[in-house]
Image 1 (cartoon, protein in one colour):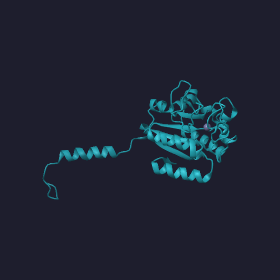
Image 2 (cartoon, protein in one colour):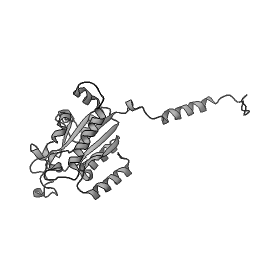
Image 3 (cartoon, protein in one colour):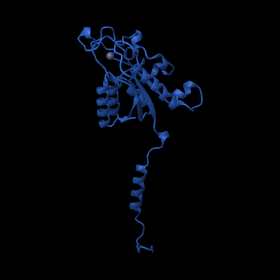
Image 4 (tube, helix red, strand yellow):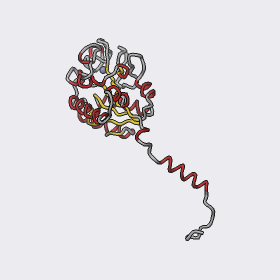
Length: 226
Ligand SMILES: [Zn+2]
C-alpha cells in the first residue's frame, strides 16, 4: 500500500494511453526531418535587369551564407554533400512574346526571356545548380505563373513531384520577389502539406511596404518566417 493510501492495482489502460500521448508529444529527432532549399527566381533580370528588385544582391549573398551554414562540416565530395541537402532552383522562363509583358497587354516589362542573360541564375549560385533540380515556369506564352510549385525540370518532373520523391518534410525558401513569386511558391508548398520556412534575410522585393505586408500575411497562414 502506498503512503497516500491508494491500493488499487495500476490502471494499465491509463498507462498505455499516457505513454501513447507522451510518444506523440515528443518531437521528431532532427535526422527524421528531411529538409530541402528552394531558391526562387534569383535571376539577373530581377537582380540588376529590367525588373531589378530591392535587396536582391544582398539576398544572393545571404543565400550563399545560408547554403554554407547547412553544408559546412560535412565531409566528402561536393556532389555527395549536395545529395544530402537538396537545393532546388526555380526559374521564370518566358518566350519573347509572353502574355505578362506590357506589349502583350500584361503588366511587366519583358523579363527572363529564355536564353538571355536576364533569365540566367546568378553566377555565384551556379556551383549548386543541377539540371534535374532546376524547374522552369512561365514557359507557356498564355499563362502567368508566379509560383514555382508546378515548375518543371528538363524531364518534365514538377518541383512538387521531386520534393515528394525526396521525402521532404521541411522546405526552406529564399528568392525574389517576396510579394509575387516567393509568396505564391510558399503558399502552394504549404497547401501541398510541407512545413514551409521562409528565410527573411534571403529575399528580394519590389517595395518594402509590400514586402512587410506579404511577410505578415504569410506568417498568419502558418509559414515560419526565420
Ligand atoms: Zn515573369
